[in-house]
Image (cartoon, rainbow, N blue to C red; front, side, top):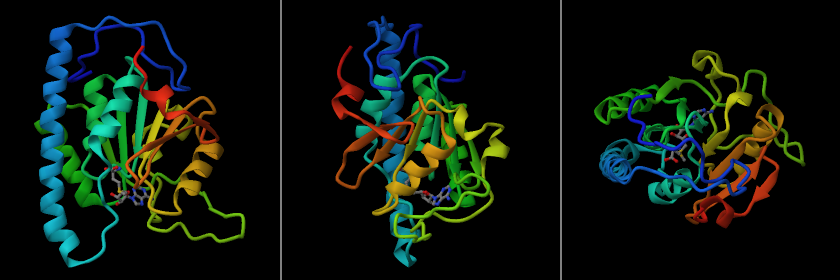
Amino acid sequence: MVGTAVVAAAGEAGTDGQRRPAVTREPDAEAALHARLDALCADGWAIWERFDGTVRERGFHPFVPADYEVVRATLLALRAPGRRFLEWGSATGIITIMADLMGFDAYGIEVDAGLVATAREVAARHGSGARFVVGSFLPTGYRWRSADGDGRTGTIARGDSGYQQLGRAPEDFDVVFGYPWGGEAPVMRDVMQRYGSPDALLLLFDADGTLQGYRGGRQPVAADALTAPA
Ligand SMILES: C[S@@+](CC[C@H](N)C(=O)[O-])C[C@H]1O[C@@H](n2cnc3c(N)ncnc32)[C@H](O)[C@@H]1O
């Protein structure tokens, strides 16, 4: 895979947050990886400032970035060669590209075609093989019904589902990341419960700056189990 700096065969934490045997990583490769992640995040924040000052200046757009450093720390703890990562609503692609550079087999689905074009440019600039498609992360035929019967999905847009273009099904992913707006986390958890692998880890970024983990979209995984050193 392009850009992979992971040299050990074993992971640091399972997708369920369980500890795994300690891994040995090449210090030079780790330093090079961190330099690339620093450059990627700096690029991401610069793109966001331009987006905020142009697109969002003119009207509402649902793209607001997660805290890249918080997500970075968690993905570093979860990485393992070949582990498959999907970002729901990948925007400018920074988090998906981060995952690719760490050694995940990384994909992003984003409904805004302009943002997908940006993500592909960023991936090329940073030597990443992360793959992006224009589409919805909601599977074909999915319908949300809250406990009180409300079917509204907030800022989660309708559109053709992106999985067929990816050549992957929702249950093919080991780690899925999303940044829901207020009230949208139950929708994401419902999608994961109904379509994802029961062993997969759903990571949801919260506007309070924390990441919540849910195995199979259901059982919460303690935050310290996601990032504790091996
Ligand atoms: C809050 S932003 C999060 C961006 C990025 N994941 C991050 O954390 O930095 C949500 C993104 O989801 C996209 N989006 C909204 N509905 C979607 C859908 N059904 N499928 C895919 N992307 C969607 C928006 O265009 C926006 O870029």
